[in-house]
Length: 212
View 1 (cartoon, helix red, strand yellow):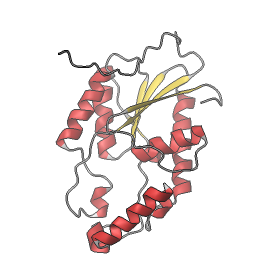
View 2 (spheres, helix red, strand yellow):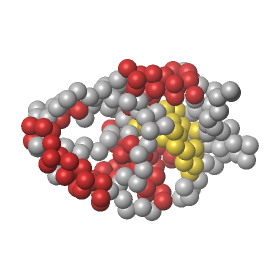
View 3 (cartoon, rainbow, N blue to C red):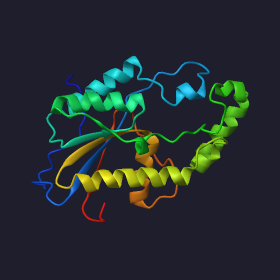
């Protein structure tokens, strides 16, 4: 039996002969990160790619190697930076690092040398995550950085990328929260996390003037 072919995004859209006057963004989530049980929060924020995450990063790099890319941008967090490197190397590019593309720090105001299980019982953590799932708002995390400020910095950062790359397709290797923040802004959604991007997934946004 022939395996079913999974359809992939057609980057060379026949309805768009060029990117003249516009910028096409490919928002790519990083590969899977490596956590360990009760990892200190300060380490968890910048957790490295797992073995699977490295394979995912290389796979998305291979997926995009024949795409017309003008630039690759990324968060400074190593899981996103290394994913960007795997994409950029096929195009002779160096990723441009922008701190404003960093993921939201859900536990910014908690002790960074502590793990979650040092701060909460497992039942208490379940209650936190249930509240987050019910509200779909980052503010449901008790120690979260300012969620509105996070969204503002992400939108500003990506709009700067667009302004600097009219006429080109660019990759932004970043995070699930960053992708939700920007696409949510484009769609006019108030919820912080309206979908969960898969690791190494690609999300396309086209920008022309004020139109997204």
